[in-house]
Length: 88
Image (cartoon, rainbow, N blue to C red; front, top):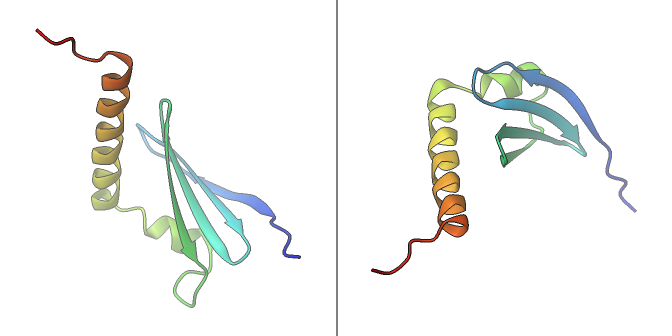
């Protein structure tokens, strides 16, 4: 059987997010955390993506802007579950 071994290969500093990079079975995984929320992005190892540095280069300002938008949507959904609006 295929044994899954995931190891932390680095962290990417950021003011708002905790960004951790993992490597597991020919995949790179980015885990981005903000408060109680997480986003995970998986990338196959390839000729263009071989190292932590290659993965870190994918974490651009544009990418993080999209990540923030998703976190904002997650927070709105979370709050609407916890604090539903009462009908008038």
